[in-house]
Length: 391
Image 1 (cartoon, rainbow, N blue to C red):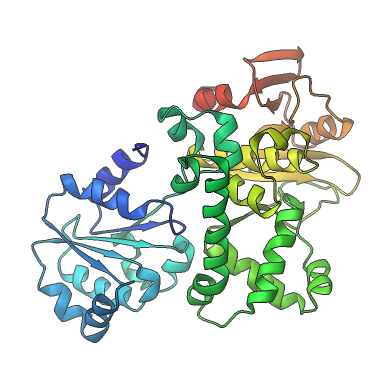
Image 2 (image 1 turned 60 degrees about the vertical axis):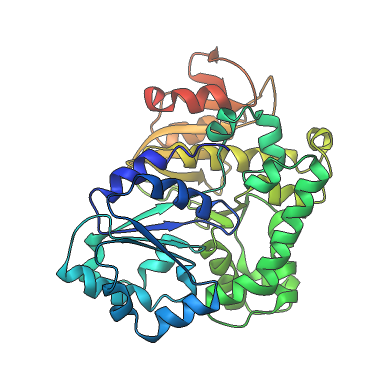
């Protein structure tokens, strides 16, 4: 079993907050994680699973009364997206008893989606944590190579499958289950399975492209508000990432729409029908796949005081990633799937626009080098290991 790096941080949050909300895509390992966590709780755990009809009925009928029966327990409720109305009831209970470590909620929706059900005055009593698919530093602790992790992605049943065919079969079934069952439940509306399937496939074929709702709408035969809503549903399910553009402190004509990535590289490769790890380097999608993979791995370990965006002007200046603190850029990054990367003039212009004197290039392998005075080139593994000292 691969140990999650967030286990220690989660234990600390339970010592401070009455409620911990653990969000992550389905099949990412939330149940395993909470059972590991439950071994060291202050209060004896009691489990409810809202995916089971009996538990759903019990907690739907009179949640406040039921939860009060376990005043000396840590109540662990899985599948909270099935009953978001439970959150206000819980807020009432902790309003009278603010002991930390009383509740753990898990859900297959983003923290932002769950916060909508939370009374504003109780927001300070809830700690939110996102459990992503296994990121590379976690996978490496399980003796898994970056090449395997990049191709298969971070879902445990894909990453640890006996072979690539079994791993991809799991991911194809996961996508199908999301389209046929989960996304309608998450959104609370009936979605068109055909449109969602085709839309998700188009996003995979255009991974990392700048978002243009009208283009997708025309191709799918629906309205722009519909494709925007579908994108928001996939984002709420933590399956896609909208990377915002950097728009502060610039007099330039900037591209302002976000770039959209499929968050898990294994899902991306399964949807693009790349059958094996050996096929990936020669595939036309390899550059976009590597870029999205790097973005996701950095996002997983980025210190909380830093933000991610990208920079692009209508005149060709571009940085794949900008790390910023507040409204101040601190690092410009170009992402290259190459052992000898060649930088475009646009990257240097972007560095100048952002008033940054050093640029960084992230490649698959290699220690820190300086191909020229203003450029630092480094392998992804080395960058992730040194990120806090580099920034």
